[in-house]
Length: 443
Image 1 (cartoon, rainbow, N blue to C red):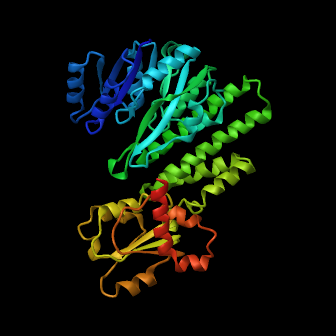
Image 2 (cartoon, rainbow, N blue to C red):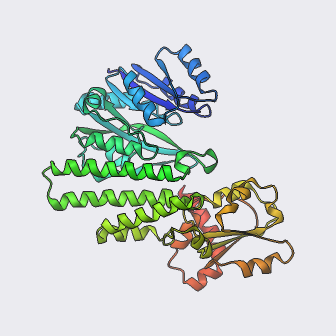
Image 3 (cartoon, rainbow, N blue to C red):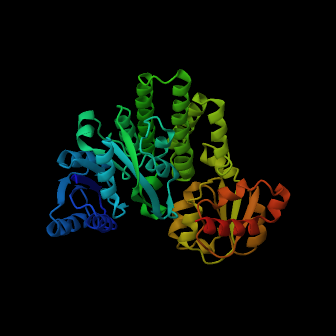
């Protein structure tokens, strides 16, 4: 049995950190140390850390001034003493047998890193990541396996500490996709990788209200994202030149990196475009055009396939507001913030919301989305006819009672191609209810 250091960076994490600590206490593998790096929290996080450190001697508290998650992880690595090391964010958890499984497979295979399964939970449906599942089932993983490109998250991976230290690779001081940059700069040094299906990290998905990085958008975050993916590309390109793979094979792999980059841009940044400032929107449009220009026709077709549930990307919020695909008409008189937030989390951002002025009174959510330019408020008197005249969308979705809308709903409705457009317009509301039921069944 080898000692495993679990490095837990945490910043203002009092809401979830107990769950993370409890999952470490319940591990079947007992030779562990939990290096908990408090990144300058201002809430009750330190009190909770002190509580657990007082009860369990394997907790190693470390304090630093607020410097970001990458700095905290690097600091934790400097304090770690285990044979193996795993990075676990302070809102995620490991299943009880995970550390035991990592210990077993790393010792049996002599590998430098092992990859386990990955399951989302929280604001998203509970589902296993298909790419992590494929990797976890492999005894020997080629460093150029494309599945690795679709599994950036850090917590389902366990590293041989000596190899990691000797590589000189550390987390870059970036706030978006830094896990991917770290992982690829490490594996592209030519390490031995293995998988284990008996280890699993549960990754907490956050809602918009949680204001997590994954639900945020700013020029700084987008710039960090482009820098991280540029590092992935550069590390891959450098390793491919030494790999002995043919020029065609190398180019095929680099094309996948380009597609992965644009995939994140469209599905994680563009879907939040309504919350972005003009500088960020302009940068997104320029980067999308650059990536698309570098792709071959096969990858361009794959990108165009993403448009089916996005609508063709429009990197101008005013133009987007002027030409919505869907007009959502809320006909009720009592609005809920949950409904508004869920609508503005849609992965298809080309919509407008039309509602009664009285329904918007004292609504925190309405105040927050008002500046997006796609909110139309109409007086109660003559609302129905005025709403019909105001709606600019190709399709109109009438909603009478507020409810949570699955973030995939509008995108799924746009993908329904078997129904003729005229029929689809007429029956858009019942189609939406059927789509909601389908999404509930699929989870």
